[in-house]
Image (cartoon, rainbow over all chains, first blue to last red; front, top):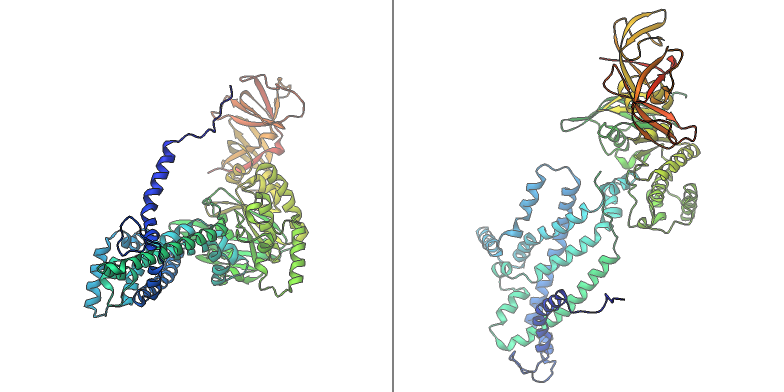
Amino acid sequence: MKMNYHSWKPDGLLIYAVLYLTFIYLPVLFLPLFSFNNSTYITFPLKDFTLKWYDKMINSSDMHHALFNSIKVGLAVAILSTIFGLLAAKAVTRYRLKGRGSLVSFIMIPLVIPEIILAISLLILVSQAKIPLSLWTVGFSHLLLCIPFSMLILISRMEGFDKSLEEAAMDLGENAWITFWRVTFPIVLPGIVASLLLTFTISFDEFVLAFFLSSTDPTLPIYIWSSLRFPTKIPAILALGASIFVISFFVVSFAEWLRRRGVKVEPTSGI
Amino acid sequence: MSQDPIISFNNVSKSFGDVKAVNAVNLEIQRGEFFALLGPSGCGKTTLLRMVAGFEIPDSGEISIDHQLISGTPPNLRPVNMVFQNYAIFPHMDVRGNIAFGMRKSGLSKSELNRRIDETLELIKLQGYGKRRAEELSGGQRQRVALARALIKQPKVLLLDEPLGALDKKLREQMQIELRLLQQQVGITFLFVTHDQEEALTLSDRIAVMSEGHIMEIASPAQLYENPSSRFVADFIGSMNFFPGKVTKAENGKLSISTDSMGEIEIPALNSEYAERSRVWVAIRPEKLKPLFSEPKDFSNVMQGAIGPSAYLGDRSHFYVHLSKREEPILVALQNLERSIDMLSGPNQKVWLQWSTEALVVLPRD
């Protein structure tokens, strides 16, 4: 008797997966839904379709200011953190360092300290040193938070490719700097992109540190938080949220595409 | 060979922590030679090679390439190129890109460079593979690309780190022949590192056998195999049976040695280093013992034993022979010249082993 093993049966794992995805994405989908809803109140039933919240969003200069603050800080943090992470990853994976293990775990500490503790201690430090609160202090604290992430990503990328590739480049006549650009950089590029995206995202939606260390010049999360007191502002924030959601979707897709067309690094065995 | 060293090591030492990887090595490699550094893993051979390439710096001593001291020269400015153990083909470039990598500063025009790359591809028999990427190449092809990438630079010395280690047996044997031909064709000095004694014997003009950071002996393959100078070398290269003996008489250019299993033997003294009563090893290769399966008439140069475990290897058979005065069995290799399925009728069969005096090697014993 012939058996059809490929007949579709609803199995437990599939149901689990569908529930899981629904649970994650359903709340997020309320954002665009209500951003087109012609009502200040976020309740069902829905009223008419409208674009006025988007119009409001586009014309709110406060919001733009906060958005650009966040982008500014996020870009600076992403670039600096990735550079530091790359240098640290190179040092950790390529040189015989004394106390390498404890050094790495020391740098990783901000990953495990509760952010609020970090925020309070930084605030104490900054006020003791009489440094005025500004986007600079926010950026500095974000850098502290992001470097461990960059390091983790880039160390795993650097460990994944063979040191003898760099030696081969030097053997073929290139100095350390050109070797970095012709061999190391192209091979770790996907890691660099991943680090840039992740650290930008972390900085962009970081709230606690920004709350403690910013002045009157807010980043976007601080602006959103302070707007919650004014119900009329909320639909415009939903519109902004929906826009950011769509943009992130494209950015992540682009990054994934970039990663896939990047170099496949083969797993190398130890010598 | 004329004395024109292209590389010389002068009392070179290198330690990693407490481990002396290379210990006071003196070595000269002649221009145009195919030279092997042979030894078990951890003997310092790779460190020696990497010091020539510039990836390791000697703690003391001097290395010169073509009569120039190179201690302070970084790897990128040394006139040598290396084929890495895992070939280190750049994964983000195709074959042409890999081969052209080192030619950035060559000053060649684009068309001239392309012509050179084509020539090199032809040399390593990879015409038509220029556009392939590393992951689309087999192990043997990768090795060819690694060779091409180094040879196009026309180095004074080509360094090869376990060049055939990653290939399977058939391909390895084929590449051995090709490497040898290639070296003769390009006329560049090849210095290579291997732990595989067969590879070293097949490829090299001369071999340096290393152990624990020291060079034990430098000689041609035949010299090392037939006339090794120490028990370590004799044991490391091929198989060898050792019999403890004592010199009873050393005069008139002859040595008389008494041994347990071989009895009294008398052989010409090639050098005068053995005095009377000095302790020696008498050694013989397994294939130089001739097994006789019926009792011989003449018992000179014959010892009797019983056959122990055996192994059939196709072209030859190996079997152990137990001797009455010796705990450890000795190894005998027999060429399977006849097509016979069961030459050995089984364990405990009586056998007489015959040797000729010329086949014996006398080595110092502490």
